[in-house]
Image (cartoon, rainbow, N blue to C red; front, side):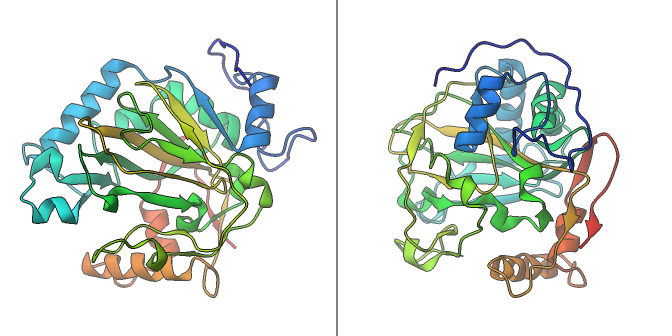
Amino acid sequence: MKLPEILLRECSVANPLIRDKEYQYTQNCSLLSREQRQFYEDNGYIVIKNLVSDDIIEKCRSHFVDVCNGRSPAGGMFLMKEPTLRKAGAAGEHLIYKIQDLLYDEVFSIYTTLPKLLDYVQCFTGPNITAIHSMLINKPPDAQDTTIHPLHQDLLYFPFRPADLIVGAWTAMEQIDTENGCLVVCPGSHKSNQLYQHGTEQFQTGPYKTFYGVKSEQTCQPIPLCMEKGDTVFLHPLVVHGSGPNRSKRFRKAISCHYAASECHVIDVKNTVQEQVAKELEATGARKHLESLDFQSIMKLRSVVVRGSEGFTAD
């Protein structure tokens, strides 16, 4: 389906917990056309072309390089290094493949709080928006297979519900295609309304632990999302997606943030498919002197209200 060009208009939405009878996954928001809403309903994602300006992207790119090279402090952000490249002596931008927890950073928050972006987010969450997870993903040239992100569902990492009031925004910081590791997505996979079992072992190609991926074989024909600089894809948290390795001589950078309606509630993930992820995050928190906090508390602590009123109640 070819999506029509649209004008930026102010959203007018009601209580997000009261769903539109015609649409399950989008709000009654004038910013999205009926065609666009139906595309997201059917596929679990939608790409908005040229949403984020070059100026904002270049500010974030420059800041990322400065943080990688130690010219700007990382603060509370979490830097992740590509293990095979580290062993080969890589440094700086060629070594750091991801920075997480951007929400409190003065420069990166220009993206996570961008009004133009939040106007679209509001079409999925409603008017009260909390940013719950953020990262800048960098795939260096000729990166090894450890940069592959197997097919997965983002809801695995979030104790917030309902899932239909959560959306991920993922913006290309340069041309992204099949050569440098673009996203691939399984259209319509969100309609299962199921969070699948995930694991890491079957996706491990070397001595290093890889990302979580869906363990069982699902009926899925992933399609590549080739995107230009500034294009932004909005993803339902249950849609199955992933990305391949960067086998080009170019970088592949993207900046991303997940948002939830502040009306969402927080669930206990004990004895669910999310329990292992929760334990790992709690172990990481303990190393940062947050040993008294559980998964739910850590995720709430990492979240920031970016529009409207606060929320998040216990289940």
